[in-house]
Image (tube, rainbow, N blue to C red):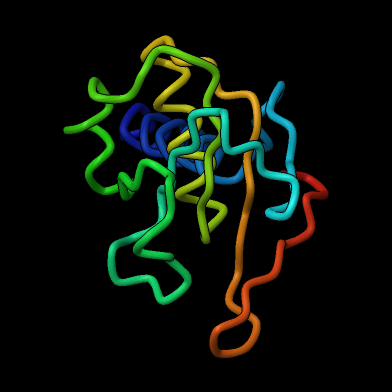
Length: 123
């Protein structure tokens, strides 16, 4: 019984770490400083109102990342997401597959039609 309880606690700790612990080696960059010559991967869902349908970014929502990650070029990658959990899970997944994720941008909807950068502290 204690073994099952210990295993459950370990699984919860690992899940919490992957979702909420800061990712080392990834810089947080504001949206206005995006370098469009880089490979920019947008992890926001298709139905997110902040997604620009005509953007030059590669739009692969986190839910589809495991299926389509092989289509991404093996270059330095900049990740855009609207949720810190998707952002961190996406970065950790891509790093585990050998991609170099160097920058990230975390966006939030502030008013209808307006998007602002969330604070990067701890991200």
